[in-house]
Amino acid sequence: MGGAGPRAYPRPSAGGACAALFPREHVLTSTTLEAPAFEDVWRPDWPLDVRRTLFPHQRSAGDPALRHVDDGCWRVVNTPDGPATVHLTVRGGEVRVTAWGPGAERAGAAVPAWLGAEDRPEEFEPGAHPLLSRVHRASPWLRLGRTGRTWDALVPAVLEQKVTVIEAHRVWRALLRLAGEPAPGPAPEGMRVPPTPQRVLAVTDWEWHRCGLDGARRRALRAVASVAARLEPEEAVDCPDLQRRLQTVPGIGVWTAAEVVQRVFGCPDTVSYGDYHLKNLVGWSLAGRRTDDDGMMELLEPWRGQRQRVVRLLGIGGSRPPRRGPRVAPTNYRRF
Image 1 (cartoon, rainbow, N blue to C red):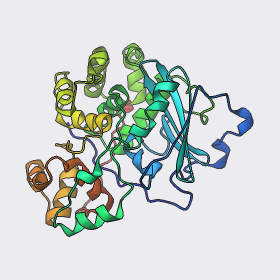
Image 2: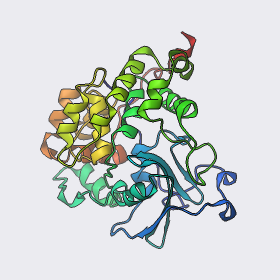
Image 3: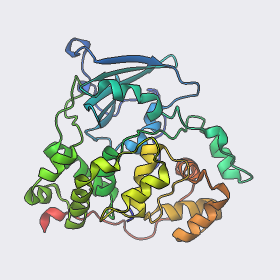
């Protein structure tokens, strides 16, 4: 099940890795801060860019679960211990991590993995392709982070099935306003915890309709919520194992499973086969022509084992075919 396609990475700004995307009034002052349940300082050994590393996890600048503001980056997640709000600030090459909520310790300890500490970019060889060589040299910040958690990645991936990015992001925001609890701790106003599987199953049909979610995605979301505990990765589970497990759930296809494991494991090889735009990004960048999904995989074959990293590099500096005709308009399912 294909989605709306890859988005270009944000450009670095003068404000640093966590440059402001929201007005200054959204930032909380130190007098309003609660004492965090977890604090740590971590120093990466590469030129970290928090904003662009976490970009695959952010669903629009107004995402209620992930925001970049003047005082750093805020992220709200679910953990086995409960929800957590994590705040990241970068100064002098150090990442200061503070977290609140029942899951604060677990989420805070996972931050280095979120930001790519377990990735191995040195294993990638761009070969003789000039575009990949150039973009790879120019992007030492590129790391494939991993969360180790399926549910928070699975819900937005289901919402992105066969719709435009704008529509999927609107429904994600509406769902968190409807079913997500307020973020623990002193998070910026409006931040919410992604709803748990139990809360998703409790949403009524008329509430889904108000969110603008069509029947097919609604059924897929209920199906994954009913077996969510069995979809969380164990130590012995790898990318192919989790993909196979996900695809046993009705409504979850190759595309959705790939989108999830890319975020859960930071998998360097899994490609979103069936994506609406990705095949043309790859075809145009590597061969100067449009292609289909099988043609895309053929073009990526020389980099087997690192094909997702190649896709990320092309998302940074690749080429897209010229646009012809109007763009696909979002469908407002609330009208039906």
